[in-house]
Length: 148
Image 1 (cartoon, one colour):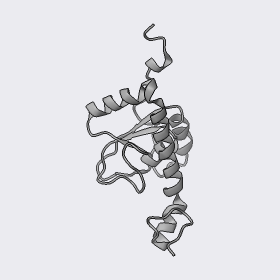
Image 2: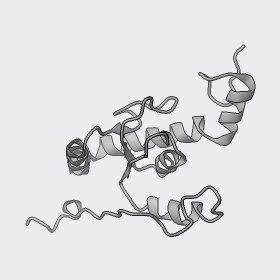
Image 3: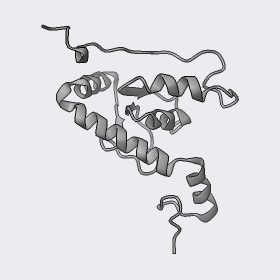
């Protein structure tokens, strides 16, 4: 019967996680945010102009969920639309993509894109990887693989 399938229910959270959370000055942002993000299959990131590629995108990717993000001038290094993250360009497209990836037959694709996004965030967007790129100028390599 319709409505009895757990895939038919969609739980959403919109908002922020309290005063002070989300600020780089907040010592406790990681725990509550990470705990909350691990509960979801899909995370939607909407970034303000000039904040593209902000840490919230990487935080979302690290959860392993499928991440839908608004368009950026360029996706962060090694991320690809529909491969490791999904870019939506309008509210209508966001709604279509949410409906598509929540369908049972698209679960495998949703999980795989989430896994790829998490892997890229871990491998290429850690503080160590960024320091190595800045110091050694190895922008196309993974951490520990210097240009020879």
